[in-house]
Image 1 (cartoon, rainbow, N blue to C red):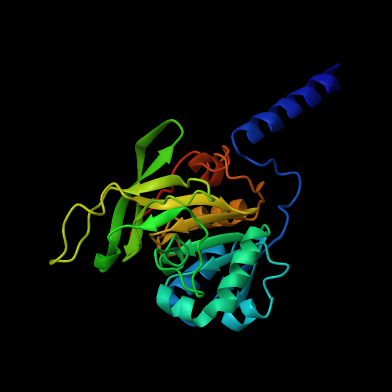
Image 2: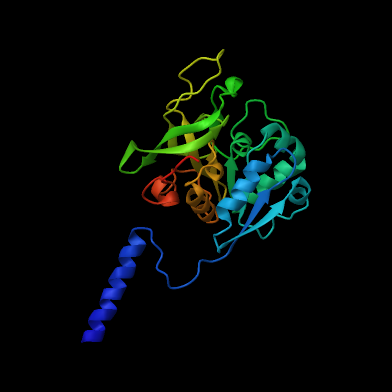
Length: 281
């Protein structure tokens, strides 16, 4: 009888941990092969930040790829592609039409895509689409003509299920995009995970365009998952777990319907229950 009670308690404990998003320590996490783009158009401090943020995650195996690797099919076998900060025009030009189509095929077939700053500028909807464009998410860029806003730590609000705009956190910003919903009938509406509470603008640009705009968004493209960071989790002490959780989430696959996104497309479904405890150096 004593053994039955102990076994029952163990089962309840495991179930409770799983209900709160905590994986019982019974087996190692499955390995995830992650491709980090380090080709033309990137800035080294972003790629090195990604490597440092993920280096202690034993389940994430990082390999570097450039534009030629992507065109040549070397994303095969990878679960997630990270496009880091830099210049979106430089990354797009390097990829070219073949690289852009290869990237779209990778995600639609079930690969995950994480775009950070320039990488996030790369994949929203475009009014004047060319062959060297990638459109993975039903979002548009707001006030893009005034993109030079500066670089500093800013405040965001995590949009949790328990109430939008209730949990603040700090994160590094460096001229990232501002997202607004798009109107593509063939793509699902994205989920906003965080919004800016800081307003930055150049001296000759209008004020009030940044505050309240979407900063971190997620959606589905085909069978793949997409998450875009306008700010830089890889360059913010304390936000490293955020990026690791985003990679693990993006490695999952989704059914390619265009209906509303499920509960896995939420702050809790991706990052857990609370925002990171960040700090500045």
